[in-house]
Image (cartoon, rainbow over all chains, first blue to last red; front, side, top):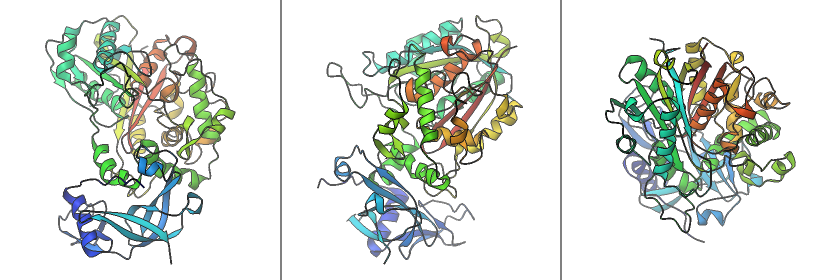
Length: 134
Length: 391
């Protein structure tokens, strides 16, 4: 299979990926002052406007909030997999992330429980995969 | 200061909508711009404000190539497809405050040829300014297989369809109405190619719930309008089209789709009530709708945000001929992005002007007095303009 596109990120996005790869678990940015989760990573908290935060490991399970089923992709590596589902997963902690999955589109439904797995492409980038919750 | 009734649209320009234009993208933009200036009864030196397209050609180049000697005001509006309609508000502000006397708003691109250059043409190196879309698509969506707007928007359109258990009837009604209206428009890409419900139903999915015929048509094209004060407009050749009010709105966060508290609350939901309040009008005061139709389901969401239906109810609103010529709210009388061509919605503004001048030919809505235009762009930004025929 052709390799999937992996971006060269920077700034807060890079920090998020590096924290997750280093921990070997999904980490999410959390406000050090009010505890609010921030995703995607932000400089200031939208609740208390604090600039202090850290990346904290989360349980890695959640619920499908929505999803896209793609039949056409400009990326040849993805076109080989079409049709494929990309999931919007609401983590049990609250923030939402995208996830790819080996589930067939017909097996995906809003409300379905999933567990997330880290696919580290490098020290600087990880892709999240969703598996049926165990 | 309320901008209502202070400014007017006095000139319009529009190229053909084609796939594989033999014109350079800069020539498309300049052709539409010169046509708009001429249509306004002006010459380039009468223009002193420029709002350029998001990329491709700068204000500095536009002024130099058209022969505009003294640009007093320039601003770029970067809201994707919401840009042109939002730009009308900025143009109205400029002429009302007196920082410029006449503002040229331009849009144009090689929306088809950029990805599929003609074998006999040298591809342009000019690019669009992708704004906030660029970061989100590269860092967040592309690694998950979502490269095109159809795929990215389906992240919330799926939620919309599932939440309200929508059939495809509403989306099909939008696609068919736009295609029917395009049959009346000499410049529409899809003129001569009518669409049936059977063909819609048989068309392949691109990204569920979007079928091929739920998606707009990529085209090479350009449009332009000229905005000046209503006072000056009354001395110009055409009956003025008055800027009655408008607004823009952005979801929070606007730079990313999936972490909004409500996936279905977009910029237009904030812009719509602001625009109606400023114009002192309501949804039922509108005679013609020109709704940004990058995708059919996005039209349905906007009609709900504008108050034409409760959430989930736009599908019922658009069926039964309501949005077709002859219905209560004729929509996208030029064919829209779905069937005329994709000029980022400035083609919707141009059509609204034609309707209010009563010069829309076979697509004319009899006695049209007030038109509403929306813009919709990037990851959910919205804009609204309410325009009226000068009395």
